Amino acid sequence: MVREGWSWSGREANCAYLNLGDGSFLDISRVAGTDDADDGRAFAKVDWDNDGDLDMWVANRTAPQIRFLRNDVGNRSNFVEFQLTGTDVNRDAVGARVELLGDSQNLVRVLQAGTGFLSQSSNRLHFGTGDRTLIDEVLVRWPDGSEERFHDVQTNQRYAITQGEGLLHLVEPSDRNVSLSPSEPVPTAPSENANLGLTWRIPFPAVTATSFAGERFDLATQGRPTLVNLWASWCPTCREELNTWNAAREQIEEANLQIIALSVDEVPQDAADNPARTVARELQPWFPMGMADQELISACEAVQTTLVDRNRNLPVPTSFLIDHNGKIARIYKGPVPLDEMLADVSDMRYSGLKAASAAVPFDGRWHGGPQLPGILNLVDRLAQTGEAKRATPYLEMTLGIASGMPPGHADSRQLAARITRFCESLRAQGDMDLARRWLLSSRDLDPYQPLVWKALAEDATTRGEPAEAAACLERWVSLDASSAEAWSALAVAQDALGDEAAAQVSRQRATALR
Image (spheres, rainbow, N blue to C red):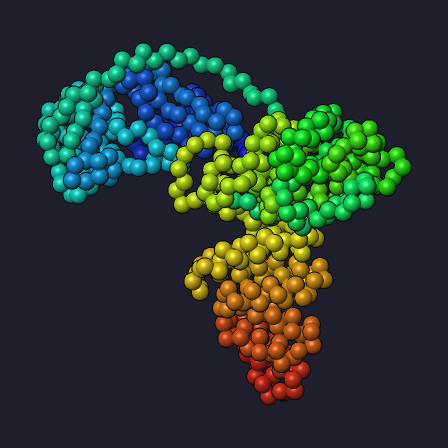
């Protein structure tokens, strides 16, 4: 649901509860103004306007992504606030505990780094003190176990405490003159336009296309920068973009960029009344034009859905900018300005972190480098749509990354299990040889997974190799001796080899485990 633009749980209002002081709480969400229709994710508390009560900033998954809730109830009670600085402990004093003592109910706050999901409230510890105007004793317990005590502390003040000084420093609130007024959020006009740079380039799907002139293209192996453009004859924006490229031949060829424009019109390429062919005839392009079949469209949609993690159909026009290695550098949804596209082509000469940085629309430093996108999810998508064979370049990429992992590494085991399940799709789609190749890769990644030995046994049985099947099944039961299914399958394999005594023992084990 979330990947289709809907809420994860839907219409669950943010809640606010009033502590009644007797161990119970009252839901005041409606009167507090928190029960809006936003798909909330996180909130942070802070006395934003320095009036002695706490306001809230709320982050949402959907628009408005930021909402400010100012507390205008009026500060009818007293408060006190502390700003801590560590010296022998971390400077932010994270982990420090402040206690207000001397009343029938002591108040406690702990300074935390992160106060909720993806959120951090103010690091000033704020206490509402009710009718109390004087705090008998304030106890500060620092993270290293040391303590400091302060007596007769006035409320309605803000104090700074530095570890080891034994002093309270009065902090005057800044004269911010905050002037805020509520407003209705104005939604951004919907647009399908986007320039998506890939910080980790992945192979373009192994698909082919044929131009109207009969020229055949393997789109993933052109050996030069290539723009694969998906357009439609009924799309005026598409035709404008094609005209722009046709007029800019000299600039595009100077950038060594090849354009292949493929129509998504749902008509056969050789149909006499094909409107896309008519457009191409009128345009007389210097670049090849042809038709995109459903296989190519499905593969492109699987790629973009995986990369953006949203189940949305591709708009037209959509273009894929592919580098000389056949890997996707950028995806353009909607038309792209010519100068922007040529600048992106120029950036494709970079590699490593420099290429990743060029794909990001803002400056910054990398912490740990770019992350590999959900390639295994793409593998699963292709397998589910009957295109498992086309997923092999993505498996090879992940396998290359996993080759540097030590044996038994958790990521290696997870990858091995995913590959083994993928092989089931390969076998179901009739590609037995390719399935066996990947099963062997899965076995090498994690020789201790029972699932792969079961699959290898089935493969050996299909190929008429009973001895090999029995050896794989013996390995399976050695790893999962409590599986009745494993013992039963082993009995069948032993019968096929004529080993009746061993088969009888295996059957007995299987019966006992059922």
